[in-house]
Amino acid sequence: MKVLGCLLLIFTFPCVVNAASTRQAVQKGNQYFHKQDFVSSLKKYQEALEKDRESNIINFNIGTAYYKNGNFSQAIEHLQKSLLAQDVTLQQKTHYNLGNALYKLGIANENVDAAFAVSSLEQSLKRYESALNLDTSDQDAQFNYDFVRKELERLNQKQNQQQQQQQKSDHQENKGQQDQQNQENQQHDQQQSQNQDSQPNEEQASKSQQDQEGSSEEQQSQSQQDFQPQQEDSGEQGQPSQQISSGQQPLEEGRFTEREAKMLLDNYRQTEEPQGFLQVFKGKTDTRPVLKDW
Image 1: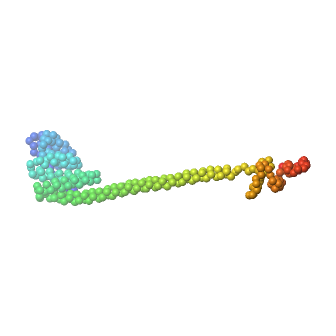
Image 2: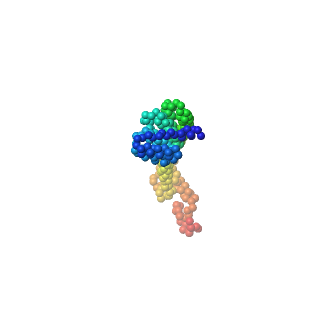
């Protein structure tokens, strides 16, 4: 696939150093690299870097080896150091390889950190632009630039969709929390309203109970007033059973008129008391035993 081939196209640069041991390590690393033994080539480049840490060419080669081993962060770190090279060809190749490494790092984090992925692809485009400025005839740089630009548009669209979904989710969550809060407030208001409604009923019940107790006391008092012991119509107490009509002079206490005495006697005879017990008339007293034991 041409896209993959262009993205993976990495330039190596022969290392020219004064020290023979450093030169040999770089040459050996180049041999491993062309054999696609990127692990062994990386080890040889690291040996050479220990002897000359400021070498732009060694940093370029070791950065390229890191890229081939899938360690894009370390690749970017070493490739950036080789940008200080005075050689324009080395600079152009460094920008190109940096564009590839930044693209790979961004895509690797696409599902982890969308914002970081977008930023990496934006930097990748800038590196391709720099490579094209130094060599307008670099078709691989132009092809990769167009490809990464489309990928960046895809990531931006994906990020916007994720943000919209997140905002919608947050809105629904906030709405759910607000609805729950409103429901709780409504229940609280209803509870307060019920408590307020029940309070007058309790006061009314208390007042009604007090009224009932007062009425009961009045009835009891009235009953006590109505229940007065009646005076017996007895000649011993001397109280007449009939009121003295107007115009008559009251008799002395304990005395009866002839008419009152007769009425009293007739009234007594209508009771169930034995007649032989009352001695009103003059004459013989009936001393015979009563027929009934009352």
